[in-house]
Image (cartoon, rainbow, N blue to C red; front, side, top):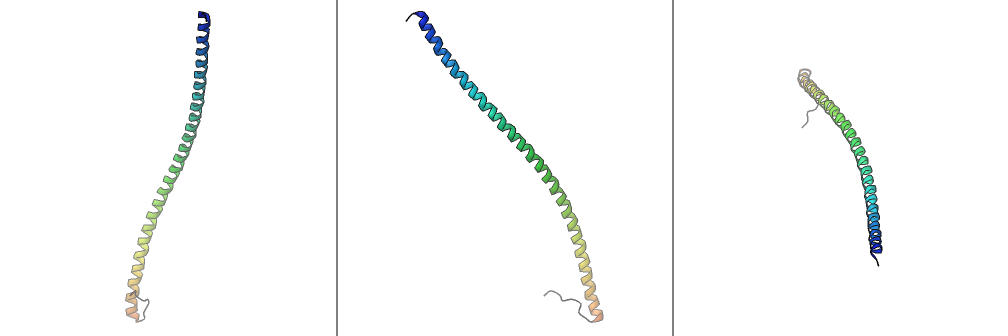
Amino acid sequence: MNHEEKILAVLESMQGQMESMQNQMESMQNQMESMQNQMESMQNQMESMDERLSNLEQDVSTIKEDVEIIKEDAQVTRAATNTLLDWAEQAEVQIKIPLYRKAE
């Protein structure tokens, strides 16, 4: 085997290695594109979740306000009921007719 044949064999070997490296790089590029698509999909999902979470936070805020109003109304109702019960106790003494039964 002369020098030219040896050089040609080495070049062919190098060309095969370069083709193999190019195939590996293309495969890696495809994997990276796939990963990028997955990342974009995850980003879209995260944005959707953020939007839903924001909506939930607004709903919870509204519910808290409503609960505070209900608490205030319950206190007013409780006070009015206690006033009526006191009146009923005093009235039944005056008219001598039981108006309600007390809890035992």
